[in-house]
Image 1 (cartoon, rainbow, N blue to C red):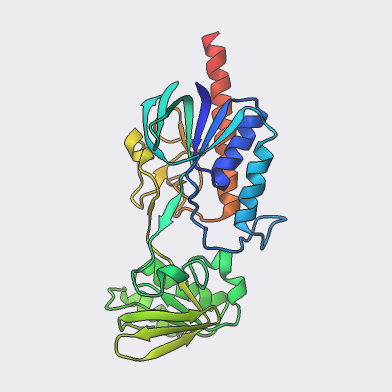
Image 2 (image 1 turned 120 degrees about the vertical axis):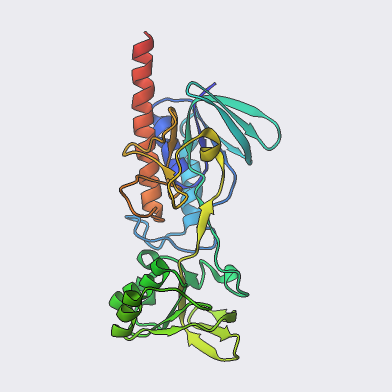
Length: 306
């Protein structure tokens, strides 16, 4: 039996495994090979790694774990998770099973950009979701914001405040934005286009938004806060509390509402935080936090049993 099985081999999962490996725990990392920022060539706001390749970061992380003999990396999809504290069972897609005393879920979220031709394949390369991650590179450029919900449209106001004086909001059809939001957009000089989009063409710095009426909007960068969903159902399957936005509820120690189960990265948040951050640095920090406090709980359980 493993001390901990970590499901997910992204920054959160690998960081958790590093902490636990250094504490001489027997750890299995189940890596399905899917990461949310797979299309991205760069990551930002990770101290000493600003502009670094996220793929190279993971490669280096896996290599570092090789120094700790208690940590095992296994490629493959997890099919199901069951059991409870001190007796969790993880079944893999090939039918094999492993058991663990504790679990760390770090499977992340999946972005689901609007199903408009040209949008999904550009998401993460010339269509970006986060001004913290990509706003600096968009400074002074012509921008479009794709979305019709308040949080999506407010992104336009934020970009206009920091990065560009030429921002157009594209709602892709009718919207139900409150009057006060429309007033704010008007006051800041942001145009709102409600015509349905037919497709998006071009590349970064030379994008074309083609509307159904035949008109075309030229933009250098598009921002789109796409809807998201959990990549895996394991938290819900185990009975963990899920917040209204679909994130797994955790406390300040990254513990879920199910004893022995922790969650880290953008799949989880504490209720007091309004949104799950999508920063690589934050995911890594969550993984460290989860591992530290999980380790302390295991240690105290050992004392109680002695």
